[in-house]
Image (cartoon, rainbow, N blue to C red; front, side, top):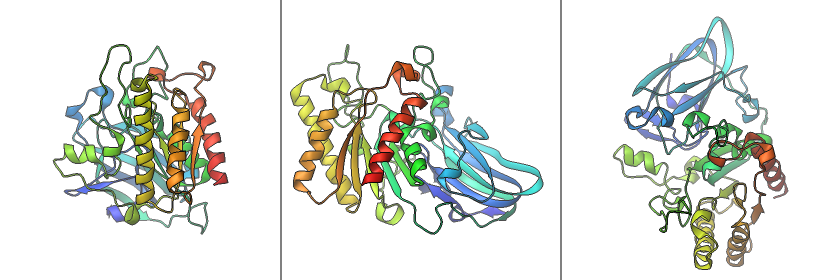
Length: 361
């Protein structure tokens, strides 16, 4: 039995084109509940564009029973798949006996590298009714707009030992996804390593110009701008009202801007202005959403500037619930991931702080 895309439960942004549903952002994907013996899927990607270190990676979870809630997702996948061919057929689940399982596919690698699309799903069995531990209440919906920290960059790597690969990315272990899990919430990520608001990451020692070719405010409004450009499509604006209306939007941007601001006041003020503009853009798109701006895990230099941007926004929109959240910089004693990115332990600390704040909103 082949399952249509609409028979699957989707999370994250997705884009349909030529019979393929692309799910490219970190932690995006789908799940379904079946009773049977086998499930297979065909995925598409662009492996010829990427080295082995940057190809698309999926995590496959097979969960006994029919619970589709985020809390039912185990800490580790049953297996991972690296998409090394233009089309890859994957056996998602196989059993000698008939079983009822929830099969979940999650994009572990981020949108900046190899893409992932679903061409078809076929099962030997029948679909089964899903249930969620949230009961009859609608779960909270979170949206995260962030950088490599939100992507789970380097979590499974070790600082000064490993260099980055997409195999090390674990968005499901990062603070964003873990916060959603702690709250039993739905979650959507729009995140990109190295991205900023006035400059992407540049080497402070050798680079004297900002990198402005791909800033978040020119990327976030679209469903998947980079994917659309790779497919030769005009980028479509993401319709959150029709697809996913968040209750809380969390912005984590500034880590890479620090590399360009360098303590220079006019650059800092430009960062404040751009963050304030993004907050307003989020509010215009999702007027009922509460907004949190956070920063600090990989550097606290702009923490006060985040607070300043939030306060400027609130002067114009005093009825909107908007908060600034300052994280403290990661500790070496908690472990450091690849390229000086936070470890799973550091992400857990950030999760506890952010979860507490959201619970008070």
